[in-house]
Amino acid sequence: MRIDCFLDTNVLVYAAAGSRDETHKAAIARDLIATKVFGVSAQTLAEFYNAVVRIAKPLSLTEIDNWVERLLKFPFTAVDANIVRLGIFLSRRYHIGYYDAALLAAADRLGAKIFYSEDLNHNQVYGSVRVVNPFLP
Image (cartoon, rainbow, N blue to C red; front, side):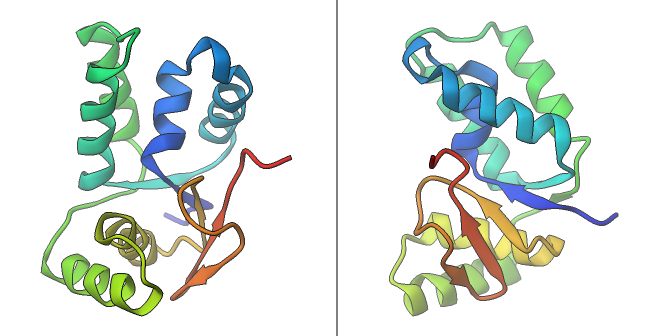
């Protein structure tokens, strides 16, 4: 299956549990989820779960489970030795954190050319993946 992009965990958290002071980010995130065929990884879903159970206004466990099941329907990759190796390489090459680099490695594996995130440099290309911050004006 061809995918349009890979979504960072923060995008998914905004979509599922955007706060009152971040309504514009929640709307943008929900639009991405509704209109794009995106990829996720095991790391993405683990980070998503960890974030949504810890937010100030948590979702119910049923809502969290529903979100995870919904996200599992999109193209998915496990974290394996090759993801770890490429994550380490990208982390060192671009001087970024390993976990961000591992998500870029997962995006690369799934063939995503765009990685939507607010955590890395907007429009920078990391390996074969370009980061786009969807929340910029």
